[in-house]
Length: 289
Image 1 (cartoon, rainbow, N blue to C red):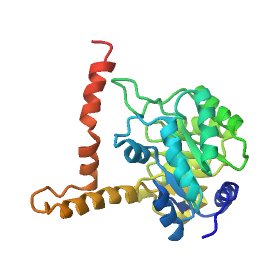
Image 2: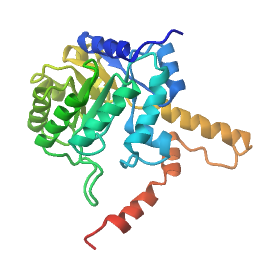
Image 3: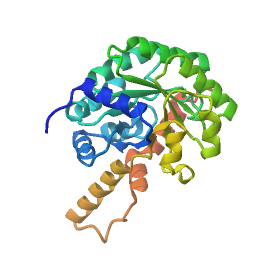
Image 4: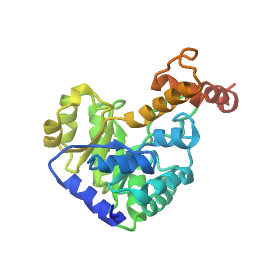
């Protein structure tokens, strides 16, 4: 299998954004999954922040993974990838200056694109994990990301949460990020096509939706017509791998009748110990007590 250069993969991703088609991402979390996705004909992959936290740390998605750990995993994937990979870079691991470092490191790792979201991370104790930073700070992060990239083919995609904002505020934020120079806009929490149409009518850059299999948005032709070029359906492949590992080890130990047959969701909850992190947060972060 001949290798494709990082620049070649970035150019291929740019072509996807410039097309009139909606592409679905493959969840890639290590070199083998990246090779499998390319061999099966996927046009684009995504390394999710939550998946990286599970794969690298065995920890819940509480913004615990560090930039260096995330970059190491992205580098392993980038070393063998035959398809463009989007890196879910969360909040850029800090402020706008941290975002610049994030872009430098992920560009070297070989990703074709990365998303920078305007979520307030790590979450403040007692607050929702969906709290957002100000629009001005979000703009600063996008401008910083654009300043830091060396290869102009690398795509910087601004992400926001349309599920916790009014439609007017979503439009305000996304238009601001578009004006700041983002190559695309990623949204999570879009409810249905009526919701999407209101937002998309105000934007001209390509769109990326995190749908998690939302049945109200399952029409690729209609998505494409509204400017959606990338759809993230979730990370089913990774969770299937967790389930397969559990089942294989249960069988190896002859425990199929003695151990509960847990689902992938139950397994993730059981082995990432979220209750421990919640208790630590109460003990060490609850400064009002």
